[in-house]
Length: 77
Image 1 (tube, one colour):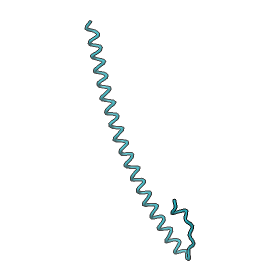
Image 2: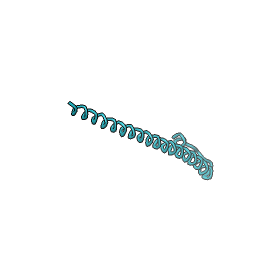
Image 3: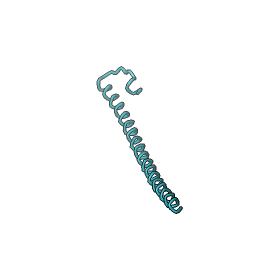
Image 4: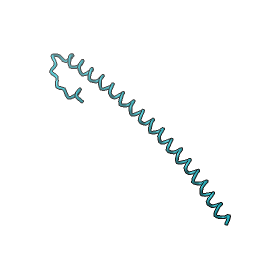
């Protein structure tokens, strides 16, 4: 946060206001970029979660099928 930490001596209040406005604009830009990055990360996580759920569903179906096959083969004796 070097934007906020620098110590300045201003010749007028108007000069200080203008400098603070520049700082605010830069911080708003950084905040917007960080929010966009966060939104992208949330979207990626949602997609990965959906892929994992699909895999779990598929494996559950396979497990059910194999359990049915085992049950069928064991009753044939």
